[in-house]
Length: 295
Image (cartoon, rainbow, N blue to C red; front, side):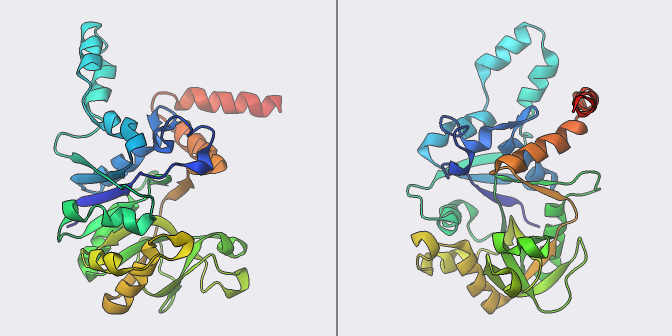
């Protein structure tokens, strides 16, 4: 059972400028919580107990968000704001650890994952890209939990994929499969991955989403991987070597995904999550109706 997860949060978030100029992109809020909290909650809901933030010196706000703030808690308690106090204290369950390690130089996603090696050790682990929200909606268990079950069953690395329109395949990393595309919630063997292929050359319409389950064997492969695109150590390159040596599978997600590193993806996530928010959902839906009628 996978209990550890790596969240690479060291990037400077240039796609989110100017919002990310002074605050980490992961701390931009959706409704009433920062993006990073949704991703941590996804991991916790799947049974993860140890979360490793691969961070940067400019991202201390993320660490602070998951740390205790005694002054704030004392103030809320003294003013009798018990509901807010409970929310602040329960951002992370007591049995979940948040550990931060630094990525001293921006050398790519593969290098960021490699920075967590000393904490992860020899255990299999998850990688969750923090600017991608994977929303479980009304599902009984989220897709990360489904991936963990698939990993436990096959012992092979799992890469989450989502079906995208064929004409959009040039914008994504696209997987090639050994056989038929898996049904949502199932996995199928990979034969390769192609980064942003031409539409007519795409091997499938299943795009890589930003969720990975990996054995510790990925670490020596990352350590040996030469810089690739952008002079960075690419996780995809190490994954291809791992696939050739041990095999790997594509897990097709059942929920919905939102790219919060892009303005329209962030707005879509806000709409989706605000409409069903336990406290603000009804009022938000009324606002949407009002503005729709005004339009």
